[in-house]
Length: 463
Image (cartoon, rainbow, N blue to C red; front, top):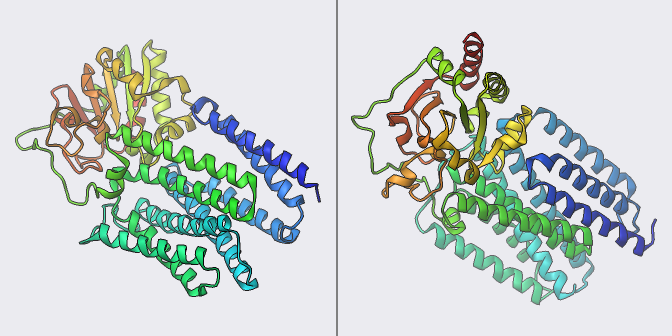
């Protein structure tokens, strides 16, 4: 056991480490150190909680540590890079579920003893239940969509927004009753939990496609807010601080992602973008694409002075990041310069492409964000687009009738030559034709990204 003041000092130290670690997560170059710093803070918080008085038995804590640690270790070792968004969704759900269980346990414990909690504890308990339940089921739906266990397209039904609003109103009314009248029947609490779980499902099913990265960030924020509410319930300062950090950073990231798509957060949450198959105002009728082959593409890349690689989800699916790194090394050995253009919403979660390329040890200074890399395209010999689609579609600039009009894109079409690597001519998440594919400067190189890149590497070696 440790004295209360010592406990608070160490909790403060843990909170400082959380903040320092979060600061370093802003850059891929310092992200690993940031993770270690934050993990150290969490370890301190766990040890202090372990030694504090009034906690559950040591055996329970140790069992939780071992079980959670083993699950986390297995997931970290076995999850594929393409499945990282699904894992993040599950972890968000676990956070929300934990907050739901803690808040529920506290409410039922107090209710069974017939004690009236203070107003602040009663309010935060209900908020912890509401946000935790929404996060849990919402994250499970996000996982199912990303894992293709259910359709990735938005699911809508008539009067959906009105129905959701009615459920939310009932939840608020019952929660207010539970706060104002501690003697309210316990069934009201169970109804709140059930409706909150249902609301989590209903809030996420109308979101799909390219909006999923925003949903992942937002659910991450929800899990943090739920944890902060739980911290107020059990009077734990470090839980309040860490939850507030996660909650605020998740909201900021969601806004950054929305800005990258030139859409509001409300439009993402309630717009049901992609619910029906959209079509750009410009049809592909009468247009043809130009194909190239491995030999011609290898010649262009081998003699290019500057190449910009635009990675997309197709690169992640093929697990071709190491082949990209090998191709980069070959081009640079021949005197060329290779840069990577990273769009904020490329992939299936925030930072997906950064993590993918970092795994192949591609230098961080070569990973350029949209604002930094766009001026480079005009002086680029070859833009190599690998599995990206909507984030390079010129319709966002040129076609006012396009669903993605106004969305900031990577200016791959400004390069002198464009090579697009895809399996076929399928549309991206927006479900529209990509004007870039029909550009006079564009050549299509069809095939699996990993196999095609391996052939390109072999051919460049022969040039």
